[in-house]
Length: 125
Image (cartoon, rainbow, N blue to C red; front, side):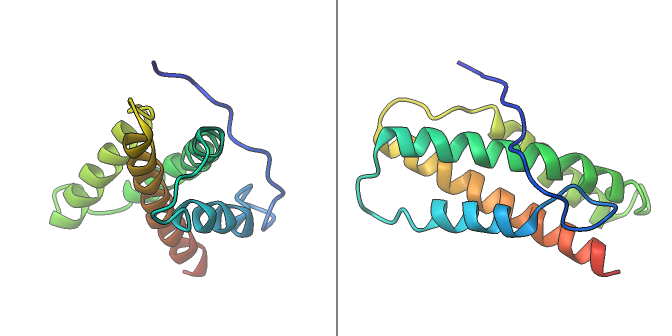
């Protein structure tokens, strides 16, 4: 079942960016710290929603910056493939069972971490 979630509320971290890097980083850390324990299903659902919301904020911005690359370059093709993969991953859902949900949340956290790093690099340019 695919659900659409609005992006989480965040305060602007800069005048031209509605992205709150601290909030996104905190969510990523919470997701990656789940470890090998047995997180509550509600915690996994909440983290998935938050991560999907953060990715929804970051992905369009990174896609826009990717358009500035030389279109036929290897870098442009790799970045497009990675962004397409991240977008597909956000539509996967938690699946059946605790392991599937745990893996999905971890993957979304890694994808969000990648996008946030690219966003941060773009701002510093």
